[in-house]
Amino acid sequence: MTQTRAPGRKAGTPKPPPRQPTRSGSIRLTGRGAVVALFAACFLGLLVTAWTGWGDVADVMFVMTCGVVTCYTRPSGLRVVVVSPPLAFFAGSLLAEALTAPGAFLAAERILVTLGSSAPWLFTGTGLTIAIALGRGYRPEMSAMPLVRNLPEVLRDVRARADRWVRRG
Image (cartoon, rainbow, N blue to C red; front, side, top):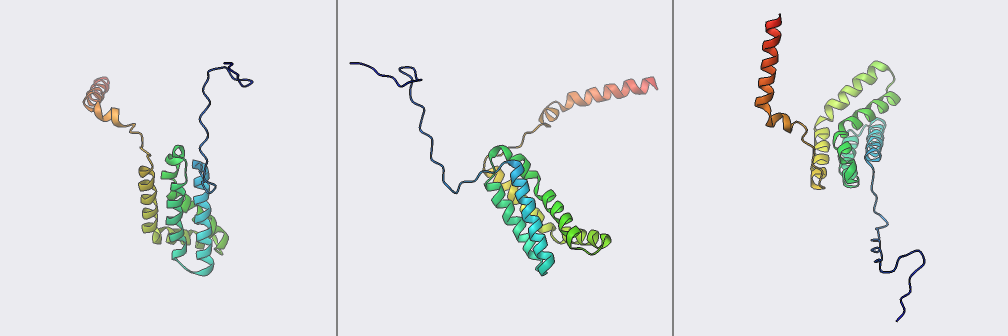
């Protein structure tokens, strides 16, 4: 029995596993792409609100976009997405009011009123983002944990340094 081999392959090496077919509608955003999409949705929602007078359009659009963007972001980009919803809404509000307000003072007033009246929606959207990210496997790093574990040693060190400083002075 004769064994043949394909050109460029060693005999006896297994074939690589076949690639899993992806769904044609499957979109994965990077962290930056998700923040840009969230900003664009906030900006467009605030423009529609300013031009039509429908106050809840921007708020509902913000919460929906928070959920959708978090669902479609790659796991490596979830850290950026979790912290960005309030910032994206604020930036969208700044730009929308700068374009639609007749004066600088009125624009500043409208920004403050928009942020104040949208606060429950901002909390809801941010909470939804955190909940979905945690459900998708995002676990924040606890960088302060070594400090908490070694708190007695840290306090002794601080006290010793303070005593030395007092003796010098």
